[in-house]
Length: 163
Image (tube, rainbow, N blue to C red):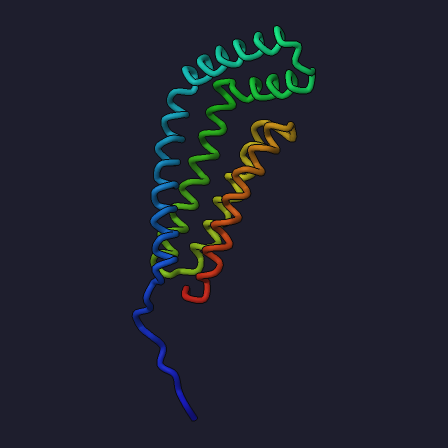
């Protein structure tokens, strides 16, 4: 009967190391951005709404179709200080989950993969929670979801090395 020795010091692959470092950078930057957005929600809202109003005025002058104007009004509804703060909180939760997940995967703990997935789920659903099922909300969810799924698949390729 042949026995196999379990490696007491498993080695993290280069691919997993690169993914974790990218997540450390992205999630860390996301945490900083979320805190800054929360703190500056009033300023962000007033600047963004001023820019949106200028864009809507130009669209009116050019005779733009109604559906484009509806998209702009949906976007403007998401630029209130309250919705910016809600979005910031959801982004902070998402980034903390993905960061914690990456730290755990760095240490080859499989539970980190599931925390990472939870963070991506929050990040993907945040635009729908804030903007509803409007076109901007669905587009935001689709864009963030696509990148998230790509990273989930790449992390998933490394699950065999985690315990």
